[in-house]
Image 1 (cartoon, rainbow, N blue to C red):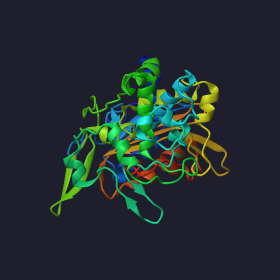
Image 2 (image 1 turned 45 degrees about the horizontal axis):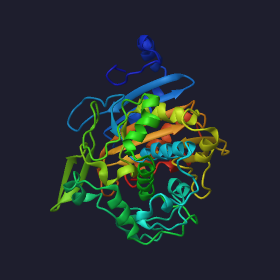
Image 3 (image 1 turned 180 degrees about the vertical axis):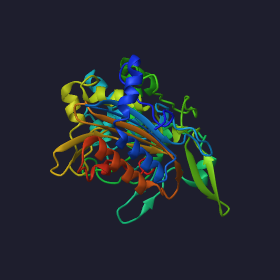
Image 4 (image 1 turned 120 degrees about the horizontal axis):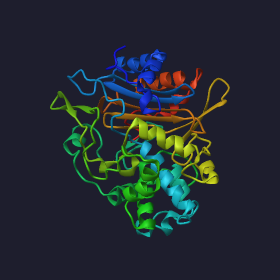
Length: 394
């Protein structure tokens, strides 16, 4: 194995050489990420922290037509992992006494005329019933579209700016999916409302509050709340989108885009190191008081979703619990898994050629399953249910 293919680091700088040597003893992880590349993805960067220490590696390519591997701690769009960060900020404001978890959202955001039964908790748990502004997919196959986020129309308008209020008003112009609190359905609108709630209560931008409450205390220097900014900091792998124009297949680099179309549903940028530090600190009790962390990790029975996290009881006997959120956005997928105490984590990014058919969705599920089995033990059938198709989630 060449050093180009995989870099492995111990937790201290002066142990880099030893860390690399130790990484040779975990060829199963390198094999797993190579299999992901072989299944159709362009590149993978993986970070595992467990009882054997830290292992970091990459496979595949950083961009089409070139041979360079993805950086092992490059920046990437994290998609719906943004929801876990946002839910944490809301709960931190609950801890500060500035928001009530079971307060009606309309009390804070009266301008939208929300159903008064919708509470802050329902936003974070996806039990509000509010229409998903990226479109609703019903069990009978019916699709009610929202804003354009696929195909040539999205490609041509990928630098357009949407304001969060605009996304919310679009969603509220559509019928609710169900009565508040009576069911569960994944809706990006819930988290755009959560952003507006944070900004209304604090009088500061979400980016400022995220910096105050999470990024600065944890030293997450690689994590960005971009709002409307299209750039990703270097280094980074590239993301692509394939679409049809006048009967011809075209592939375009969509690494640069204005992520305001998804807003707090999935706009943030991070690294595998920062995601590890964040989820480990969160579940280790460093960001929330124990009662609120317990609320966060209490799953809604129908789907196993807490407040900004999926809670999965897996393994042959259902005796292994993992806390997770994954995300996908326009050629990037992000994985974030942890044991409930934050002691064992898996964070990863995949870059790939996305398309309207989400043709890599099944491969994404299988890849996730394979990694989980390697890191959290065998028999994790069903764990990848937490990994929604790499684009449909956002």
